[in-house]
Image (cartoon, one colour):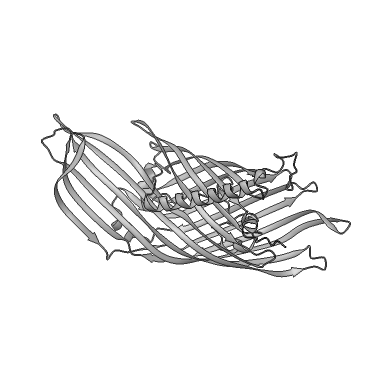
Length: 459
């Protein structure tokens, strides 16, 4: 690799590490009014490959990257990998009173995958948002004929998850030519959750002689649990020519189980009377300033199942179809309602179904066929989220697409990944309020590490 390219990749690496540190210090919100409920939005995918396939990520192996959703996949990638993504979202809230536009963004996932060539073991570590809170909206009501009150609601933050996992592949069956191979991969993650959610509710009167009201609530979370995963692959059909496999069809099955865990958040509740002087909000009287440390709620167990089929064509093209299903029972989380005070919210059994299609025209590419070496993806997903209004689930429907392009100038197998998602959030029964959104992910997978750490010897 040329020296200039190597140095540029190192600068990119250092820049992205700095971005992660900045995110931990100040979480940039993604604006969505529905993130006000519960612990925020939990159905956002931050991996560009799987986000562009409807988040159908459980069963489809990623040979060139890290799939943080299934620890068993850590034994399947082929080389040491560093990957990351940046997320942006534009949304429009439609209601009977009009519409409001929102724009936001943040750093997505950051992951390392470590694999020695030919090894059956794989190790990965990373950080990814698990829930996202970001909203700001208001409405004005008349108190009487001469007094109006503006009710303002804002919030930001979320819960992040740092994980470290190990996986191993076992060969269950192999024929004499070592082409028909049945493999089972198993792995486990240790997850550490941390983060905070800041929510501020205000009542602002249009009469300056009346004190305004401000309620500030900050919840801080930290706890740990484990995720276990399995991945099974076997060939459905193979065609050989001159002793070599020219066409093959593979089937993949996978599942994960995340153990429930009890979280003990620290909650600070501040209630104040305020006045606005020259555009500056000043606290006149602090009515309550209390920190609660004896609260708890159970993060429910999560089960994910998936299947995928991959067909390799004679002319090196590859077509993959992947499907996944995720379920998490939040109905029993009664303590969460007492922790998060939002009127008319309820908690339900969340269900998420994803379906995705991936096509590589020419897996080996070629110097004159750049677009043939690119990867094209489409997908869709449907989710019944874990929160509801007036007893009815908030549902999500989305169409996804994406493109992965090789970075040929780097002289490595590094790639740039793009993903787009277009969807809606809304109440399953009451359709008067709905959020339309478009979200975008820009990600990368870097594979320069073997070249970085080679020590040359000279005579």
